[in-house]
Each structure stands twice: as structure tokens, then as C-alpha cells.
Length: 263
Image (cartoon, rainbow, N blue to C red):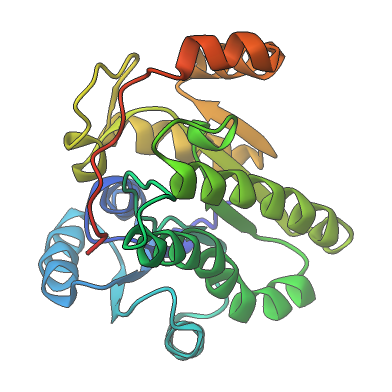
């Protein structure tokens, strides 16, 4: 489904990590890019690099994905200048350890759910009517293996990614008659600033550039759901099958992600 002159791709959370790696992958394929993130200075610096790598054009949108109006304005501007995108990637996300018994963590829990779940829907919403009318395209949601079973000390993050997986499945059913494909990608551990703070071993870690290559392959195929890397997919399937008593025994004392307010 990739056009001969390069796809039109809109990516949130594009200023670093997986988002920046995906932008680089598509820049190498002469894509027209729409990049959204909170850090405008990072976006501008990235845009210059992407143009030197072969991107046709790069449109930058400094915004917070929790701001639906800002996303709609960005979508309208990108569509006006570049046309309806072929691929929309809702990648923006935040992670932090949270403990419900701490009153101050409630604001963090709200923020994580707002960005990781509402922000995904707000990213897709303004693009869907034109993609449905055209009858093709990809809506790509970046979930996580953390959404497969709840992890201790990560109530909000696990809940947000579980919600993202269920939301994307519902959306996939809604989009199916129109020809627009919904792709759910649940990454394991990827080398990004988000995982750099984790104080515990992270098996099967992938560099962001390699992860982007594998993500793009799943996007091109229109894969409905995939865990990357595949080894974490095997682990995920095993975790789903564990009875609660055994899962609780194995994971109650698992290492926790540090508690920290998302920036």
C-alpha cells in the first residue's frame, strides 16, 4: 500500500525513542511526514536530520496529545498541505511507577491514562473520515506487553496499555468494512529514554532502529496484532495462561518501575 513517491505518515511522540526511529525509517523511504510531540525544539532538530535523509517534507506540530483541539488543528493542517495520510501512528506515551495508596499518585494515574488512551483516540479521530472515504490506510497504535497482565507498581501504565489494546480491537472491527486497517503493536523492551530508567533486567531488548524496522513491516502487512520482539510474544502468551494464584506468586515481589511524575 506504500505509494511510489513515498507514503504520507503522521506520528505522535515523534521527538525521541520509537517515534523518532519510525520517522527516520520512513524518511529513508522519501515519506512526507507529520511529526507531533510536546518538545518543539527537538522536533525542529529532528526535522532537519530527516530532510537530509530523504524525507520529502516534514511538518512539525508541537502539542500535547491530551489536547484534542490541538491535534485536530494539526491534522487539518497536515491534510491541507500533504493530503490524507496513508499511515497514522499513535505512538505518544508516558510511563511511571504508581501506587494507588499514595494520594499524590492519583494525578499521575490520570495523566498516564489521558495520554496513553485518550491521546490515541484523539490522534486517530480527525483522520478517520477521510481515510474511510478513500477506503484504505493504516491506523497504528503502540501498546505494550505491560497491557497483557497487570504489573506490580505499575497500575496506571498496565491499565492504560490494556485499555489501548482493547480500544484498538474495537476500532479494528469498526474500520473493517471501510478498508482502513488498524494495527496493534505491543512492544517488549526497546532502547528508549522510557526504558533507560528501569532498574531491573530487560530481556530481549531491541535497539529503537531495529524495532522501527520490524514495526514498519507489521504496518505494511496490516497485521492486526503483534508483539515485538517475537520472544516477548512467547512470554506474553505464557503469562496469559498462568492461573492467578501462580501469577501472583511469581510477580508479587517483581521489581518496580520508579515513581515519577511524567514530564
